[in-house]
Length: 312
Image (cartoon, rainbow, N blue to C red; front, top):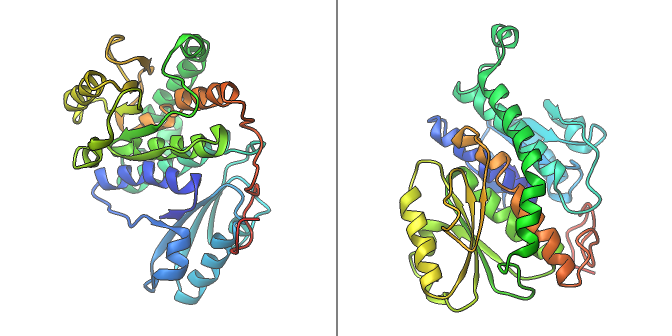
C-alpha cells in the first residue's frame, strides 16, 4: 500500500484495518518505493492518490508494469494517470479541494477502508448484503450525519479555547487506525497554518520524546475506544500536570479530561479515523486565521507535484 502526502496518511489509517484482520500489508511512501525498493513479481499494489498525477505515482506505475504487479488505484480523478493505467481503478468522484486535501482525504480513506474490509471480511460486499443493507455502511452513514450536526458545537468550542495559540510548539499523538489522523493534522499545520508540528505514536512518544514537555507546549491526542484508553488518558493528565495544553479527540471522552475535548459521535472503533480528523481540520482553519495565514493558499507547493527537483 502506498501514497504520498495526505494519501500516505490515509494508507496509514487503513493499514490498521488490514493488520487487525490478519492480512498484513507493507505500507511504503511512494517516493521511497520508487527509488529504494524492488517490487516482487505477482505483488498487488494499492496506490492512493487524489489526482493520480503526482510524479512519484506516475513513475511507480511504470515500475509496477515492469515487475508484473497488479495495481489497484484509489483516486478522485478519472482522467488521472492512475485511474487510466491501474488494472483496477476505484474512482471516487468528488469536487476537488481548492488546495489542502480535506474532502478528498476522507473519500480516499473511506474507499481504501472499504477495500480493506472486503479483503478481511469485516465488510460484506456481496449481492446479499446489498439487498439487506450493510450494517457497517449504515453505522458509518449515521456517524457522518452526526458528525455534520456536531460541527457548529465544535466551532463554538474552538472560538473560546485557549488551546489555540499562534506559533506554538505542537505535537500530535495517536495509535492504531487514528495514527494517520495525527500525521494528517501535522500536515495541515504545515500546509495551512504554516507552522511547524510533528506527529508520532503515543507509545513511541513515551520512549524519549517526552523530554520536550514544558509549559504551553500543545498536544493533540486521539483516544482509541478500547485499546490503551486509560493509559493514554493518563498521559494526557500528566502532560497537563507538566504545564502542557492538551486537546483530546475520541468517543466518550470526559469533558474535563483536557483543555479542549472533542467528543465524537458513535462510530465503529476501527473506523473512527473517518471522522476523528474533522475537529483537527476545524482547529487548523481557525488557528491559521488567528496566525494571519491563508489556509487555502500554498506559498511554495504546487497543487500537484509533477517534478522531482528543488522547491522553487
